[in-house]
Amino acid sequence: MKAVLIPNAIITDIRSKVPTTSGHDEQGGLLLGYRKRGALELTSATFPGRWDRATPTLFKRSARGHRIFALREWLRSGHMIDWIGEWHTHPGGRAWPSSIDLRGWRATTRHTGKTMVFVIFDAGSHYVGLQSPDRRAVRMLRLTDSNGQYSLFA
Image 1 (cartoon, rainbow, N blue to C red):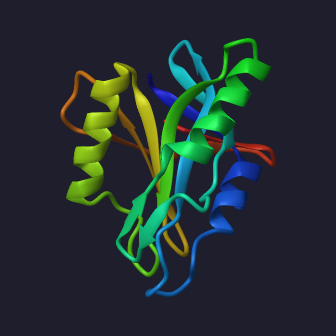
Image 2: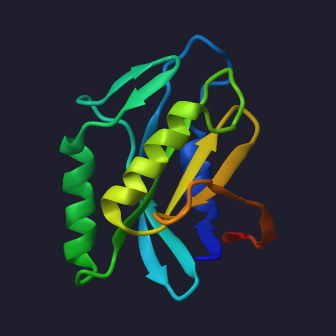
Image 3: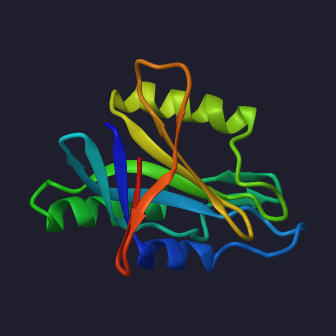
């Protein structure tokens, strides 16, 4: 995988969940979409639910609501839409992966056996990274192209 295509509407929806000051709880969810040759294309995201646990420095996603949404999308798409990553916020902090984030991302990609995208949002920016199951380090992606509808990170 070399690139990630994200609809700007998804970025806007997630950004609306990011608190602008510290002291708020982290938010997070799944990223769903298509696995294409050399790219991941996001189509939707899940958002925090009542079963999730959050603190100002932690977001623990419960499988309950997120898994149901992902399964519905998978069925609706004829088994084409896949879990392609996760997002979370760093309220009052920096959009940069912590050591906990990096360990979790490696564990997730080992579990799935697939390359996954991980996005962190802070009040004014975001970090987009790709983690492959066969690599120790995450690869940070940069915005390479954007139009009114999509942003391409590579």
